[in-house]
Image (tube, rainbow, N blue to C red):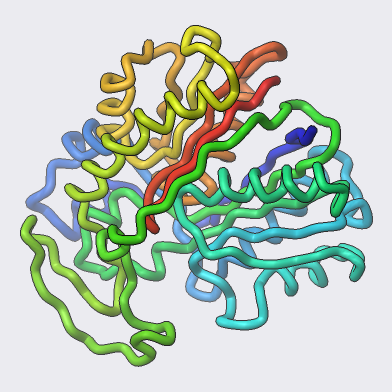
Length: 332
């Protein structure tokens, strides 16, 4: 068995409010945007602040909060789509910067909103196989660096941040069985086209999609309608599969903590899945959509405020870029 032993998170100092965005886009109604999206402000990484920097701070906070020595860590995983370099893996840099032994394994994996779920599945496998005893799972993203200044829609949603989670053979929450999925034919729905090997140089090219949104090759593009439809199709099915995989009934789940995409999507998901409001977590008002860190941030908040208590069963799920999705049960 594998358990979550502790969770911490770190957010950049700079804060950008929706009210500030309205100064740039006066045609917007700030209150309307906040009501629909559920985000009043987000934390934004500094010009020279990287995902690796945020992950390091989250890890150090975890070590301090839970009295963990870096010498205890024998595996490091970092989920990020904004690594410090193409190579080496940012996880290797963090092993050195954090003082983790050189006997530890370390690697990055490139995944977005389902990333923490995939990471937990990998960590559980490492623990269960005896390959590792204490896995440091880090999630960190600086999507703000991929957003065009005129992209008011995505700028109102995405925030930067990082989380750190320790997975061990004992701890606060037992990690259940997983359901994971991938549908690569939807890759174009959430993409940054240029910069990597397929399109190394920036093109400066832009077109307009069917929703009237500008698609820049050199910046993040999200087809909101397609992502919304994918989520409503994949997540309710995944929820049922997670219950079946863990031999549980819906009434045994005390709380659902899903990827904090945006309030409208989460409210719609809750209604489609017929889940009571008091059993469904929604709060991204001051963080925004922090991609792979959102579930860990939400779990930490629920743990600190005692919304999650001993004896509770919590379903967690992530879904988005890839397209990909994943879910499991945490037994506290």
